[in-house]
Amino acid sequence: MRDGTPAPRLAQLVVANALALAAGYLALGLLVESLRRLYPSRGVLTLSFALDALPAQALSLCGLLTPLRAAYLAGNLSEAGLRAIFGGTALLVIFLLAASLGLVVAALRRVFRRPPAFRE
Image 1 (tube, rainbow, N blue to C red):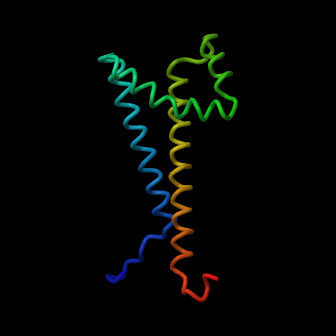
Image 2: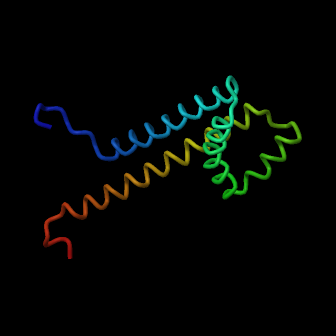
Image 3: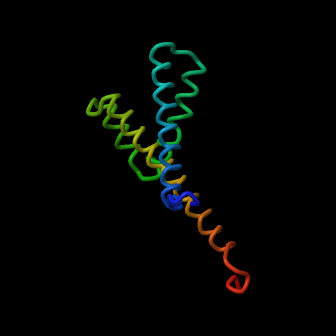
């Protein structure tokens, strides 16, 4: 940069944005879960189900949802443990999606910033 401080690397920006999105999703999840426990209503329950859909789908694609369901129903996994697994899965999926998108955009940016002679 002009004042002598180096510009942040693109990879750092991608990771920072991905972490910010994941933290925002986690904060929203904590708020909805708190509202679900304190003021259960149809709207809050619908929002809770919508937030749980992302990690449930990811766990299902990995083949882990059925064993988790069985463990929960058998009493081997507490609700807090299940919530922690869903929360961690959601954070991981959002981080990976945001980081992947950032890397694709960075690659496209790099391609289009090259001089015209190198694009061919």
